[in-house]
Image (cartoon, rainbow over all chains, first blue to last red; front, side):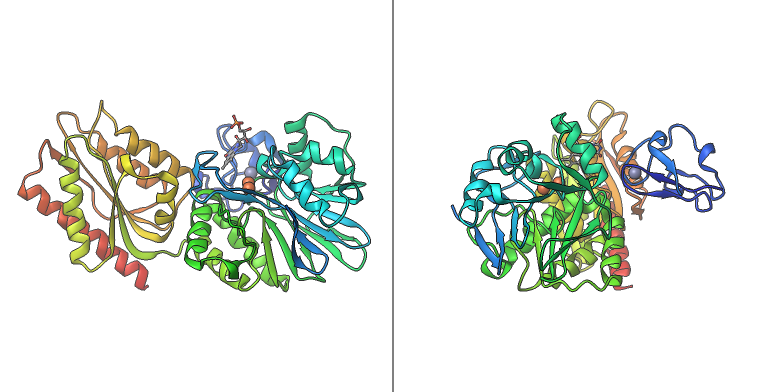
Length: 53
Length: 399
Ligand SMILES: Cc1cc2nc3c(=O)[nH]c(=O)nc-3n(C[C@H](O)[C@H](O)[C@H](O)COP(=O)(O)O)c2cc1C
Ligand SMILES: [Fe+2]
Ligand SMILES: [Fe+2]
Ligand SMILES: [Zn+2]
């Protein structure tokens, strides 16, 4: 599963970790995050993320 | 208005805003400064500009050292208008050969000035630029304070130009930490952290670790507000370590407001309980308390007890307003509980508990609602609530 990086603040979404602050369980691929999910650091939306090289 | 020499060939050339009292909602009771720095080497470098309206002061101070048009490089560490508001005007005067900034800063400058034909050169963490005998090394610090933020380290001088980080809204004629009252300075640095940096504590924590790992030797920290840390830069770094790791004092704040004084009676009973457990406690009636001053207390206190009567099925706006502000600053590691008087529907305590949940506080009591005027029994329960909070606070602070 690919990691995705926030273009605004540099936070990296790691699917193996998920995002406990928004009840996203470990193992959730980025593509399956709900559209309402936002960057836990800066609040940017999903569109502001790019796959990490 | 002259430059102040910081080290050989390195000057403070900023502006002092003595009389600002409301800085984007932040109560700046001691005014502030917009710091800019000038480095003279084979290349002449200006670090940051100033707020719009202070450009003349900046140019005068630069002119006391060197003609502003002799500046070759401009470093934009942060694009917020208090530092880059003067960007367009200053660039017109100094006509720099290069402007160093992060990618986010370039996009941000564009979204402020809507003009692109500047000699921008994007930099990343680790990018180094030789300017003669000295080197500029850039460190991106996204969200400390904005997405564009970075710091510049000059290894040969062991100077860190840190933009908003390690700053304080504190206007003084003196430029160094050892020349001002230490208590005032630390209080303003604390208030600055609580109102500006607090939400990004995890990032600060990581940055401090990175700086340690990079083994950066830091002799002086030059922030964009307040004084330069030259006598004791470790002091402010260790405070940032404390605050960013949510270390608190065994202390309880009672944040409340009241219409007919019933909730206030409950607040005083809670206070008695906390005090009986031997824990320092402070009463803060939100209708007469400055929010940004209060945040400095919130930063340091382990316990937060919230009180509000029910007004039109909700909280008093003085309470909900402060809690909305506080929630955005993401305090963590708190112990909390709630109380309030009501007449018929009584939603306030439930709503206060929601705020406590949102800041991930450990709630040690389900909360106390008193119908109209609290009787002795309710006041006794309020005291017990205060004791429960105090005991938890002691336990966590001694762990
Ligand atoms: C302390 C502070 C915090 C901010 N937080 C955010 C934020 O979380 N998200 C955002 O999109 N913009 C944030 N901003 C940026 C402002 O929304 C932006 O500067 C805006 O252009 C200000 O509009 P105004 O000129 O009407 O005040 C913040 C600005 C400041 C000063
Ligand atoms: Fe800022
Ligand atoms: Fe600033
Ligand atoms: Zn982000």
